[in-house]
Amino acid sequence: MIDPFTDVFPSFFGMLNRGPMTLTIFLHSLIVLPMFFIYFSEKKKLQRGEPDD
Amino acid sequence: MEERPTSVWGSTRFWRKSAGWVTGVSALLLIWLSADTVPQISMRSAEDLDAGKPMRVPPPTVINHKITYEFDARRGHEIPIIGEKEAFFGRNDYSEEEANALLTHGKLTVQAKNCMSCHTLLGNGGYYAPDLTKAWLDPAWSDQGPYMAMTGTTSREEAMAKFLMKPSTYPTHARRMPELGITEDEAKAVVAFLKHMASIDTNGFPRNFAKINGGVNAK
Image: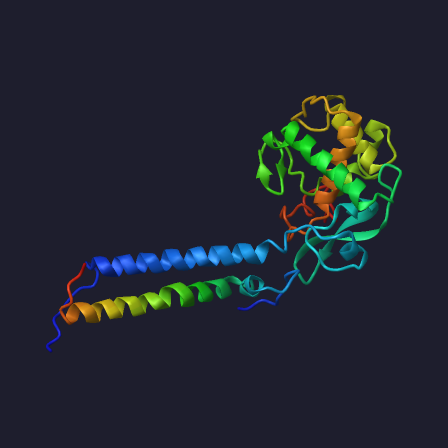
């Protein structure tokens, strides 16, 4: 699933370019997972009766 | 306090925060990616080349060297290999200034003659004529190919320069290259520009250049 590192220079984005899953996992961790937090925190606010702006 | 059943999907604040998060993080990622890429695609110095350091974009003095295109099993594609010194228009001692001036002249000629109207360079340009990224490495220009005999020359660079000056004299393709009025000096500079471009490590781009019939290391 994770291919060997073959880039010319070692770099963070080179590490992400190691097969189809590595970039996907990174982007989902960084972008999608925090959106669950945003969802549930907004849900709590609405349930407490805070007005939506 | 009793929790009221509620839906977040209609909340303006939720959508605003989500959009802000996605846009903001993506923008930061793109800035980071650019900062990560720029040093890698910057031209290296002649000292780095002499020291044999790994690089993507060699210095202009690479025109003093032989360039081959060899399969790298670890990376899974061909990469340009900068070899021993090799004469380029009879010389292999171009200084960094001379080589840089030649390459700049070549680049300006390529722009002035609008080569990218038909050709692609590093993938950018028109799709009418062949991609020129690795044109220097095309075996058609080697002593095994037809161009040297057609142009009556004995080296790759002379064959390319002579072709560029009078392309219609050498019909090699169903789509003929037009006469662009390229002078001898301009042709030499363009060939230097193409030789340098072929030495750039493009991660195997254009894909399968080496595998197409008649190409480098064709199977």
